[in-house]
Length: 146
Ligand code: SF4
Image (cartoon, rainbow, N blue to C red; front, side):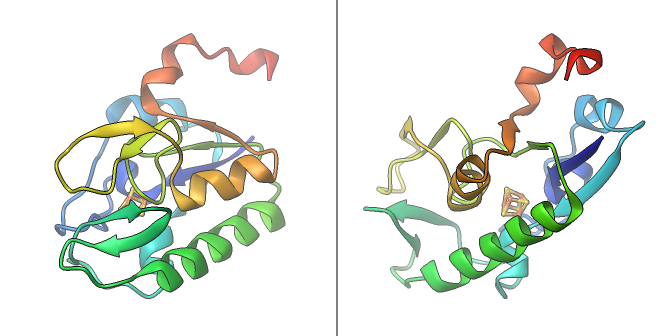
């Protein structure tokens, strides 16, 4: 199976602060599958490290008030196009990210408050009917049935 994975979950240092979110459970889960690693924010042209951003009224905005929405949407579109072209069946995405979060995101006030919602990339994948999961969802998954 082809699986899109947030690159930071695989240990790539593409996170806003130059670090990663390496997750052994994800690495273990995907080891017998074809991985399509993407970082939509980098693909959109944003540098690493970069200012943290949140969706403020739906618009990706960095903590210093700069609109980065074009870069977010461009990168998300590029990553979604790649997922479609490769025939990805599912995606494992980093929680809470304004790009990759698939269940909750920060509320746009930069005060660490979470709300229900999806990041820009996660929403695009959902609209393409590509199933999105977070690492915490993995243990209950039965890939033989998917
Ligand atoms: S955009 Fe996604 S892949 Fe890139 S650092 Fe943020 S959560 Fe990770």
